Length: 273
Image 1 (tube, rainbow, N blue to C red):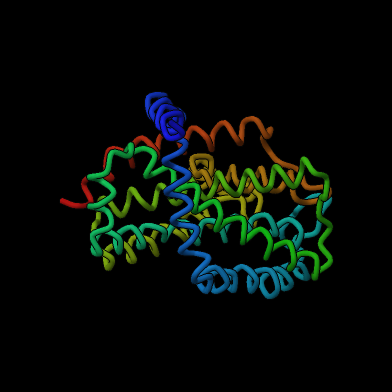
Image 2 (cartoon, rainbow, N blue to C red):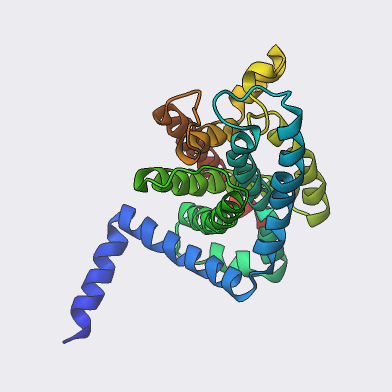
């Protein structure tokens, strides 16, 4: 008698597609986060590079004063950009883990399960967002140690966290698409190296868009990292100004994520072919 209501509730959840999608996505995300918690080494090794950018590159270019950054110092200007870089670099190689899962047979088991394909992809994107949140904590500690004036209003911190989760979801899903196309770790590593630096330098992470030549500025406007940096700069830094409104930044990032999610949903089953 006591089990029947539970079965009815489960059946109702499964019949209501949005709830089923959310439940399955959270389950996949929980599985991925458990892997990270068991072996957090990668998270901290990934943090070394952005710290070096802030401590060395940022300090040197702050003395040169060659890049106009308005009312904020160059070090403060680039801090959101380095956080976005950390998100990009952590998420863009997410596809390597997916290829490993295919080689171990995990992908086969997931694909023969009754879970929705979209929830498998979305769950992995959510877990990538958790990785991004760890980078937020690290960058904030470094920024505090360097005396960078940060915004501590609850809405500003919430905006930073939401931006990082969305940015991580975008680039991890893009990484999954690349993994579905190339299918081998060797090819993926080569393509990943090729993609990361152009995405980083063709954005407003370390210099304003106004300094770019026209053709590069056009490419930067197509680059989702530009809108992630723009949102972070407005939310994170005291006196920091974003070029676009927060609404436009989030609208573009959400639109890109939805497009990537649909493409990854179609390509994900091809991993086992």
